[in-house]
Length: 418
Image 1 (cartoon, rainbow, N blue to C red):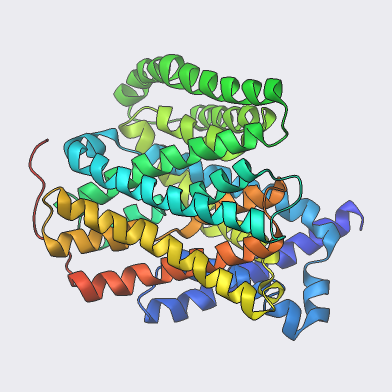
Image 2 (image 1 turned 180 degrees about the vertical axis):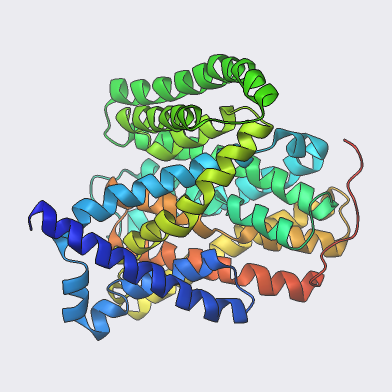
């Protein structure tokens, strides 16, 4: 296809994806599900799991292989912008306000799923042919452990805000534990990506480059930006040029972490966390979020769905393994976080709510498994299993939370600090 044909095809794909996501979103809203869940499902339905099976000719015409050259980089831009927003919304003050309980829940939500996921990865590598040959036992175990540890942090934050849980014990502990969990899970993924090639020098370069990037961004760039932002605050306006400059910093961060073979999402998130809080932060979110969430992010869900072939799970044993993946995810995350919250003195209903919220994987799981598939760490079969797990645990969150805790959430307001 020529460049012009690729451009024409891209606009058609974009129109179909956006309209289909909104149609699925209307159905999902009636079932009490947020738009992000609808887009996850819509992405899978547009791929070979449904459209490619029911209407393979239409699927081939709408998503020809050549068009992936355009769809992939634009979807990555949407993903980077979204992770930039997650960084902008990251609040350490919330983590500190219930630090002890958050750490206890986070530790349980990391150790239990990591151990169970690691054992599952070891079993699948040693006793099945599902992992690619070049994936080592250690890589398989650590990747599956990290995949089980992940929490749908952005979605968790939105559920807490939507249900009026901000400032409650349940909301504060969940958001704090989710933030800590995801930070550790991404660090584990960075280690897997850095060590995957089996080149110790390359691994050290990737890990050292990542640590150096975080140190420079948070230790040098953040205070310089905070000082610079004082003038913007006094002026009361973020100019177009200043907005473009801050976006260029995000792009540079994404470029660097991609360049050292971690992933663009690391750089975008850390740069978002380094942005000045206050008016600059609010302006960045208000200007960037509509474009990223409404226009670009659905492309990532669709690209992920195009890689999801549920039809590959075509035997009873593969479906049993898929159910095992789901069971490990729920037991390792939801049940462990509930137990840790109860042990930390959180009342029963609030503890159940924390377990349900922490168990949702959402977009963050899709990001981590797409990276694994793209780098050749996991096979399409394992990708399909993990995608199903991500969708089901995310679908469970809102209705199960309402059933166990009530639609109003918990009235208990958090004390000043622990």
